[in-house]
Length: 115
Image (cartoon, rainbow, N blue to C red; front, side, top):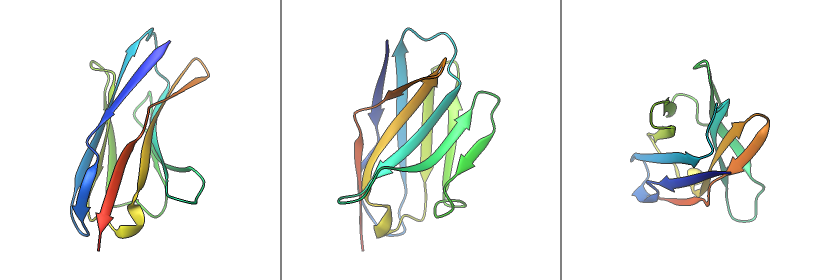
């Protein structure tokens, strides 16, 4: 089993920044993908960004240029630096880790952006 602990959410004004962290622990052999999803009230969970083991990254179009995903392989930790935040970024953000085809989710961290 892999356990994920997220941190870094909170309340911020529009235009501000937050940095999310997600640390993985447990039976870690080789993490293939680390990423972030989010779910706003009344909406489905959606992809935000991910980073593949080789270092390549992918972003949802609405966050490209504002969010940056990175990972520290030594710490099994993935980060999401969020700049120029907008009210529409308000959501619960979930960390995702994929190892040998199996997905593990974090408990979620709330991000609220006030206008």
